[in-house]
Length: 294
View 1 (cartoon, rainbow, N blue to C red):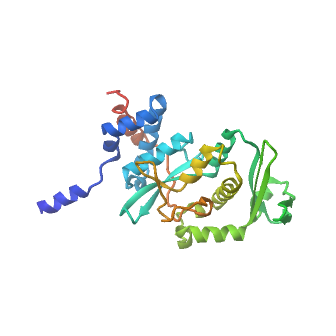
View 2: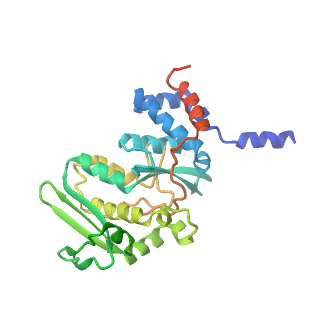
View 3: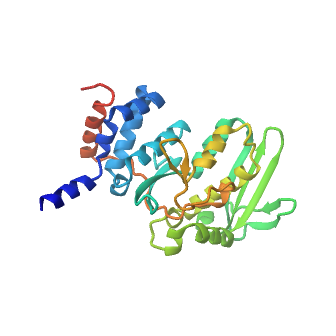
């Protein structure tokens, strides 16, 4: 019995707070963030872990690495803003759950705006009756949007449109039908194919479609040579961040050059930042050690 108990204890995952309390981890976070932003960073990830049981089961290092990447890109982890998420993912290779870094479509918009290269950037769902014509050869699209907002909201979506125009005048437009987007989701999302109701594709199909359109647009025709932040975002999106800074795409063992075509195959839970009073107290207590308040 004692041997069994010892094995159980040996296999128990170190608590996230204990992991953060290690000197090496405190030093790493303080070097990369530090100050008031560092305290906000620690508070947000402790809150995320304490309010999300599935995220709490993930490898601790993967949680911190993914959150630090979001911080480095200056994106907010708040699900209300939808800029990036920490998504629990079963990594069969490691034999454990890991936190996968995922950028939301609003995160891509933020990064594009900050680059200072875009004159225009737009992504839009096209409703039934709005599309008049689309010529993919010269990218000529003609639509007549439903003027009544309530009526438009209720109308069935038939496709998705995205465009950008750089300050230098270069312009690119793409349009995907709803059927093409559905086929894309079925091909690249194992969870969506299973139809179990937990993937972002099922919770917010339009949001995932917007993200896919922006990734298609920016990664294929964006000026990556001068927009290194966007390049980093495209490379790291839907990856598990290793301690040495390399990326593992747990849903695809091949390192994809055309990352645009790779969608996460399992997106069960978005990070919840809302705190109960008990969690708030626990969060404040756990950040004390980190910034010398004890």
